Image 1 (cartoon, rainbow, N blue to C red):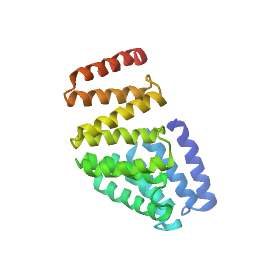
Image 2 (cartoon, helix red, strand yellow):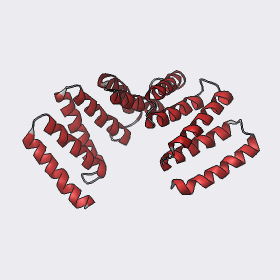
Image 3 (cartoon, rainbow, N blue to C red):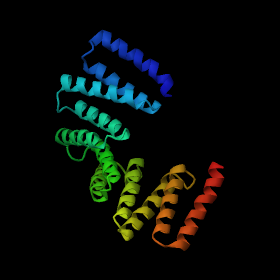
Image 4 (cartoon, helix red, strand yellow):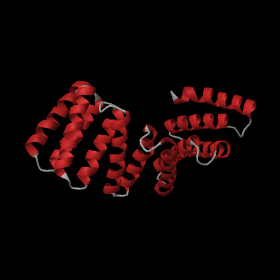
Amino acid sequence: LPDQARPLIEQGLAVRQQLFGEDSAAVASSLYTLNQVYEKEGNLEVAEQLASRSLALNQRQTGPASTATAISLCRLGVIKKIRGGLAAAEQLLQSCLDIQRARLGPHDALNTIPLDNLAHIASQRGDSQLARTYLAEALEIDRRTRSEEHPQYIRHLIRLAEVTHDLGETSEADALYRKVVALNQRVLGPEHPESIDTLSAFGTFLLETDRLAEAQKVLTTVLETNRRVRG
């Protein structure tokens, strides 16, 4: 739990500061971890401050184009995105992606993190076409580095279905939704919360595309499963 982990991480940070000095990669690593704890606690202001300190240390200690710097850029970008600073977040995430592509190659699994967040920013701005481009690249990486049953692949697929629907491409969106529903039910089981939520999204999609009979059947299944599982 975050409130239990924070004192231990802060103690470890103090030890590293004493052993290695304030301006060290080891301290940057502890700041990065502590940043994640503060984010989970909902203290985004402190989380952003810690992410900024970690990034600055990594840039000085490992270089502006290192993998450690790229990961720190992404972390700060994610925090800024959550706080609504989309322009700054987009710049940070794109810088992260550029470095990772150069150092790790275009198909490294780490690239899906900035791609996923860039897709989210594009969707928030109403640019579904750009969001789809990012998600398609993330899915191609998933196919190369993970199986189609991996949770991350499934999450990217449902987001691709959503943005494809936003673009008005109903037939393609329909096929994507059905694939996600089938994958979730096979991998997680029909009573898993993610399976229920995906089926609900599919039912809503059917309603919005005027397939009322099928929508009613799907949403009835969602309601009955919710009552049985969630009470």
